[in-house]
Amino acid sequence: MFVGRYRIPAGRADEWRSAIREMTAFVEANLPDVIAFDAYLSEDGTEGTSIHLHRDAASFERYLATAATRIGRGTQIVDVVRIDLYGTPTSDVVDRMRGMGTWPVGVHAHVNGLGRSPDA
Image (cartoon, rainbow, N blue to C red; front, side, top):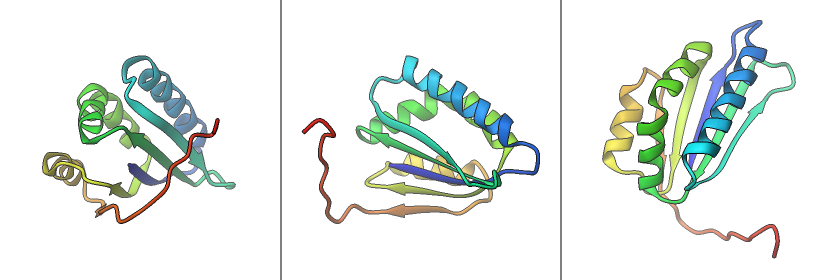
């Protein structure tokens, strides 16, 4: 799982919303193994969070390779506060995330959990 936290400069919330909608449509059309791709905006429009749930580490690698230019454009709209990776990302993914900018990148190993289908 990927969780990105962003500071959105004054007056750019609508631009971020638009970019996220475009990215979501791109992911839906081109990356069928992404399980969830969600974004959230604070009440005052100054903080954004994106959460991606990938089937496995290979899915996240495909996402990075396929969406690289779009990701770069998105980071020009916001100030990245931090990135957190949950599960077992490959060392290449971790290195790539750390090489993209100066923000902190945390890696969190899975300990335990439960998942249910909403239709169950």
